[in-house]
Image 1 (spheres, helix red, strand yellow):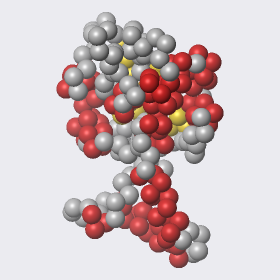
Image 2 (cartoon, rainbow, N blue to C red; image 1 turned 120 degrees about the vertical axis):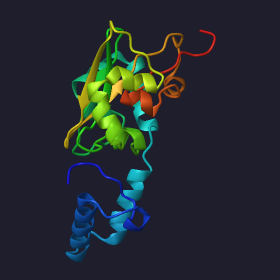
Image 3 (cartoon, helix red, strand yellow; image 1 turned 180 degrees about the vertical axis):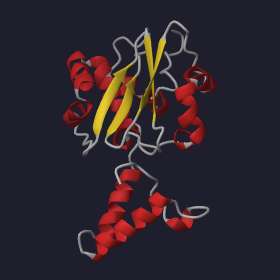
Length: 207
């Protein structure tokens, strides 16, 4: 099971269990029965996953905005560059796509909800929804407009479809008016949705 899926216990789910939920339960119980994992180890891993937040990704973006060498390494090999900041991407291959005045990127997983959880935490409900997964491929400008993001017709819009072993993250354009800001201040401008590509970081007030 290489795709990401929710980890809520079955009692918290409405309706019948999905195929992947049944498989997760079966594999988990088998691993515990065989002594490969303990229930506490499974619980600790799930809690660690649930504790992840977009702050990790924001830290990566802020470093890329302030360090051209790191930015080059991030675009060449996202997982290796994250390791420089002590962020372990595990077996996931991270591809970072850069926004520019000519190109805007947005990510999706059309199959289910593959998502760079190590950097962005849990995916929002709308990312997992069938409507987003199908529409953003067919009419990305219309979908982004519903998020309040207007992409001009002269800007190329690229949609990147995540896979079982590859995750994408958007490196947004650095907002104007942030010259001289340190990484912590810059990171505060970077939201989860910016790194998915459905919104863009806002310039500071009075700019």
